[in-house]
Length: 112
Length: 115
Image 1 (cartoon, one colour):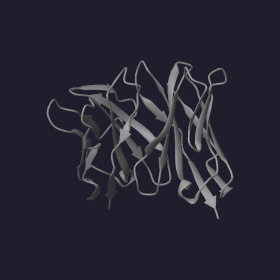
Image 2 (image 1 turned 135 degrees about the vertical axis):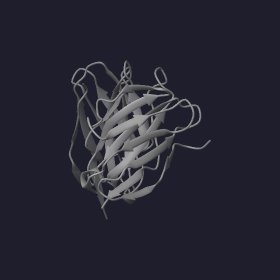
Image 3 (image 1 turned 60 degrees about the vertical axis):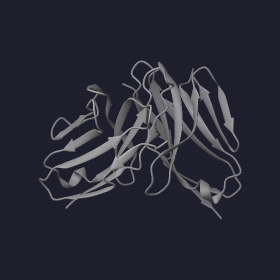
């Protein structure tokens, strides 16, 4: 079955700098890659997603890139702000079974 | 348009009791997922259901755990004879199903504490 690896597990960046979180997946049939943000005690919320027919997608300060050949995808957050502090999860899904498998998460700390 | 509704939000059970967690999907969504999140850990897939059908239960423990999504009413995750290790947040998510782009939306979660 699908396996998703996420790195780093913890990331601290200075406010205003960029943060990058990387994920790899195992099943080459995966075709949908969402990213979720989870604040303490709250539910995971979808922040951006990308499908396998696209190499990059941007939404304001957030961007995601996908390299299908290498089977890895990344989340980029630019001009980080205190409210970006949270746990971020990458995930991958195969259309034939619709099951979404999550990475173990990255705890992002934005330093003042 | 109400989102995914879970209840109870918090549940305390003594060891050996049963826990029942309920989830109503978003309007227009026919598929439900259950995930378990231990403190400081990630989201572990448990089960994926549509009405009256379990699609994938590969993440469910072999014993004590069961899930259903009846024709009428919410999806229910049932944990029998709870143990301390079952203490976790249980998140339900829903989607429109295959061909919908897979996007899933989470409920607020049910926090189970076993004492």
